[in-house]
Length: 194
Image 1 (tube, rainbow, N blue to C red):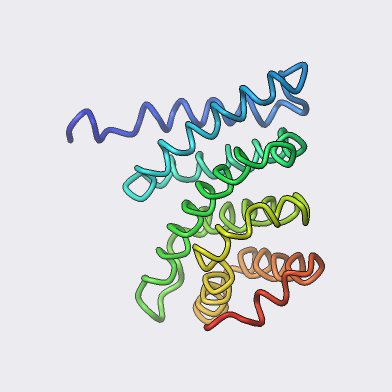
Image 2 (image 1 turned 135 degrees about the horizontal axis):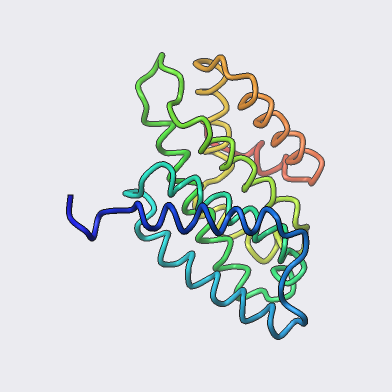
């Protein structure tokens, strides 16, 4: 194994960072200027990690998804307030989510999905994106359509419900459908080509 492909240091650092974030109930920043700086750095980090996400180790993918979820928890107000950053933030998150959806869609039929923890994190990240608000969604709807998120959701739901005995994933998927219905995204689901 080449040193360039060794993801162990990244996995360890991201898991340590995740431990710190999970203990954090509020953010370290004191004002919106500092929030903007943090968001710009996070957006840059997501841009870089998205390019190598598909080839990353499973644990590093899980860590990246968990960190993205926590960033939405800590910075949701600021994400809504900066449309340019939020649009690219959503774009990179949706690109990672699509990687996970593609992995499920491309697995052999009749076999349960192998990456259940990643799938649960993926669903939870998508729920965080959807729950931020309608104004936020309006700024980022292009990326939802570009990545055909609604088609992917229905496809993955079909695959998981047919092949999986994992009740937690099925429950998370149905919770996602409830969020989509409550937030008036059902029209987008109705026009999917799945």
